Length: 123
Image (cartoon, rainbow, N blue to C red; front, top):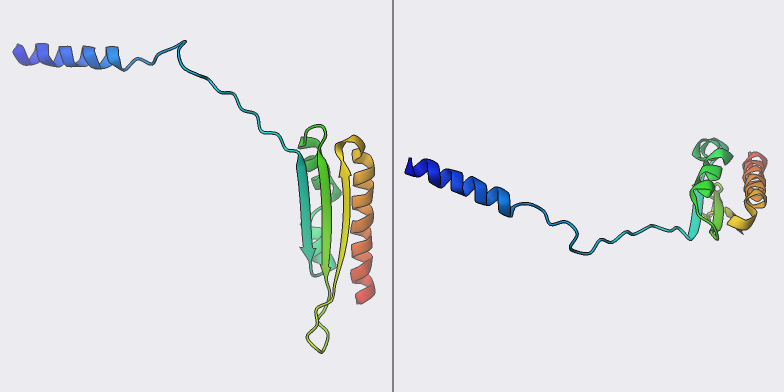
């Protein structure tokens, strides 16, 4: 009987003191804000460029960004090595902001097409 009372007293004290306190303390609500998005794509061929991204992917990224966002998109096209072990490379870059996303997407499509033409002319 003594053990039963001790166990009940222990259970009651644990449940009473383990209650969380409400109304006291500091609650912090934080929001994550993305101000700048920079995307760099490095490719070695047309096939790799086509499989890496589509314009729809860039649209999704831009739409998830908040107001007053700055965007940067860069494509690095690696060419074939020359006989003297020199690397050839072409870089295309476009920058924009959330105030004019349609113009930015149009420029992304232009540099994507230009990069595809670069590889087609190299063949």
